[in-house]
Length: 250
Ligand SMILES: O=C(O)c1cc(=O)[nH]c(=O)n1[C@@H]1O[C@H](COP(=O)(O)O)[C@@H](O)[C@H]1O
Image 1 (cartoon, rainbow, N blue to C red):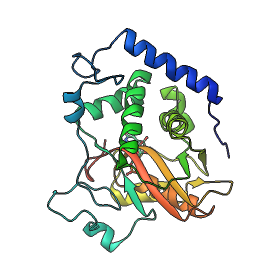
Image 2: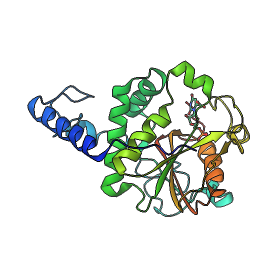
Image 3: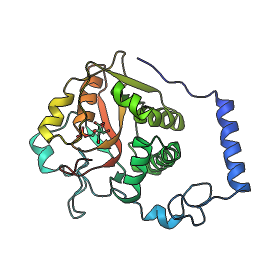
C-alpha cells in the first residue's frame, strides 16, 4: 500500500504563487474556444457553463435520467440491486468537450488535457457538488500492459493531484489478477471481469472517495468498493470524471 505524499507546504505555496503571478502577467486563452479566460482558470465563462454537466442522476450509480425525477430517488436498477458503494459523484457526462479531453488525456497521454480535467474536478468538488466528509481518496491499479502502452496510469496521475489539491491522503488498491479491458463488454460481463480483482493492504479511514476516470456500469468502482470495505471503509463514495450512459460503452 502506497500513501502518496504531497510537496512540502512551502513548495506548494511557492508554485501556487508563481501560477497566480504568471496568469496575471500573461492572461491566457480559453482551452475550448481560444477566447479570453476567466480569472486564473484556463476556460472562458461561456465554455465553462456549456460543459456537459451531469445534473440529473441516480444518487447511487449516477445513471443519467430526466430532471423531473426526484433527486434522492434511486433508479430502477439500483432499487433491484444496490451497488456496493453508498453513493456516487460524477460531475460530467461523457460527451462533447469532456469526452475529447478524456480521450486526449487517456489515449494520447496529453498532460494539458489532464490538468484541465483536474482543475474542473477540484472546482466542482469545492463548489459543494462534491461529497462533504471524505477522509481519503482511493484509486485502483491500471493493468500494467495498458500502463506501458499509454505511458502512464491516468487515474493515479489524477488521484495524486486531486489528493494534493484537497489535502487528503491517497491510497492505491493493487490487482490480484490481470483483466481484459472493459471496452465492448456487456454489463454482466463487466461485473464478472473485475469481481474481486482489487485488494487494499492497509486499514482505511471510514469515509473514502473512490476515483476512476470514466464510470459506465460502475462495475470497476464496485470491485474497488468491496476491497475498501474489507479494510474498514464504512461510507464509500464512487467518483469519476464522467458518466457514460449504460449501453454506450466507450
Ligand atoms: O481500460 C478499460 O478497461 C477501459 C477501456 C475503454 O475503452 N473504456 C473504459 O471505460 N475503460 C474502463 O472501464 C471502466 C468503466 O467501466 P465500468 O466498470 O463498466 O464502469 C473504467 O475503469 C474505464 O477506464
